[in-house]
Structures are given as structure tokens and as C-alpha cells.
Length: 311
Image 1: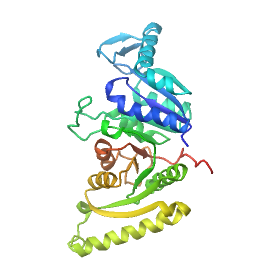
Image 2 (image 1 turned 90 degrees about the vertical axis):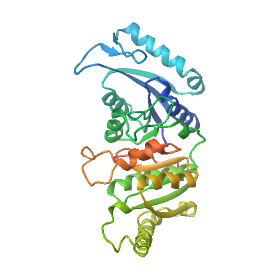
Image 3 (image 1 turned 180 degrees about the horizontal axis):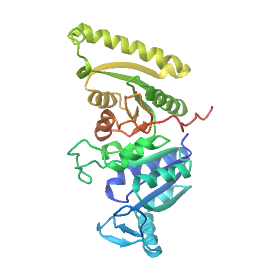
Image 4 (image 1 turned 45 degrees about the vertical axis):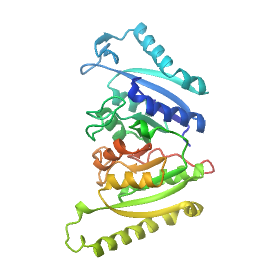
């Protein structure tokens, strides 16, 4: 399913949760895993001067320094690397988001796994602001393969995929997310939960905001889920539920996933019908990423979706 995984890491403790999931996936699904670290340059343009992750100081990235970084990564992930049959470490110097995208494209990766330390977050602590860091946002927006995010330690207690939530806003992009969610569910023999949240803040009509109006719109959403998604699932439909709630989308998605004891949430990045390169990083997804108690896979393009094992 995911034959090749790029695990993008700073090597710092805030990547430990993502590492736990990435290595477990590689072992569980027999994937090749590339542990990738980019040494960021302090300014624009080409330079051999990089920022040391530990000290924040500018240092010369000669071969001796690079080998020292590789050795630190080997030490940091020693146990995980020992347990993986097909793993290697790659290092680059440059702009982190650009280099992650470059190696994912070069390696024809099926999945990128990242942590998502948001602005204002404490390492190993709680988020202060629901804002994802710039590197993660740029990678998730531009990647041609799905991006799996583990933003909190609570989201990394891993046991494989078995309970998958697909959250839809019925946008064009959600079609790719549905294809990904259903493919994973079929491949692993898991349960699939199709979910839509009616965003009350977007309902302007007084009639629509009545309880009768809300219930009518929820019924229409469930019907649309059945027609647009559930009807295409074949035998998987027997292991699929359909639900629609009202409220704030990111709050209800996180609540629904927790209620269903989901171990994976699949979403599109955005709601607007724009060219993939112009689409904004959706605020609903951003909030789900920092609050979800399970990993979240997001997808921006249909370029590289996994095929089921029996396809």
C-alpha cells in the first residue's frame, strides 16, 4: 500500500511521536523508510553554512559535520532502525520544505510522515495556538503524495489502521481523500466512517438555523454521502457508517473520531475549488491536525494515491 515512506525529521524530541508511527508503519506494512533530515540555511541562496539544530548557531556543513549529523540520527533512532529491514538515512542542506518535497519526488514516495510542531507549541507539551509550522504547511500543500501528520504524543499510540474516519466537505478535493480512505480500509480490512459536519457559522438563513432546518440539511448531507461515496464501496459498504453532525467542523471531526475510536483521519486540505498550487491550507484541517488523538492523513492532489493489494 505504502511501498516507500519519507519520514521528515529534525531529530529533536518533538518528532518522536511521528517517528513512532512512521517506523511502526514501515515494519507493519513492509515499507521502505527514508529518514530524512534537512539542515536549514540561515539566509537565501546557496550556502555551506547551516543552523545547528541543538544550539541554533551557524556552522560550516563540511563532510565531517554532516557525518556527525548522520551518526546522531542513527543514535536517536537506533532501536527503530534495527527493527526495520529496509531503512536508510538521507541528509540535505537547504530550505527544509523544498528539500522534503524534492526527496519525496525523487524517491517517488507513497507517503510523507511529519510531526507538526505549531507556532507557540512547547516541545512535548500542549499547543498554545492552533497554527501549524510553516515547513509542514508548505509540504502538505505542495506534496504530490499523501502527508501523514502526528502533531501530539496522544496521536502516536500506534496499532495499525483498523478504524478510519473520512471527513468530507463535498469539494472536488474530497474525492481524492475518499479514494485514499476507501483504499486503505479495503487493503487492511478496516472499518470506514463517512462524516460531514454542517457548519452552522455558514448558515445565514433564519429558516436554515431552525432545528427543523438543521435536521433537513443533515438528512440531505447523509443522502449526499450515500450517493457520492457509500454507493461506490462495494463489499466495504458492509463495514461503513454514514453520519452528519452540526457545529464547528474541526471540533465535530475530532469529537466524532474520538467517539468512533478512530486510528486514522483522512481529509482534503481545503474547501475552495482552485488549482492545487493556489489552494490555501484549510483552517479546518489545521485545527484537526493539532487536536486529533490519532494520526491525520491529508491529500492535496490525486497524483499519487496507493492501490489496494488486490487491485
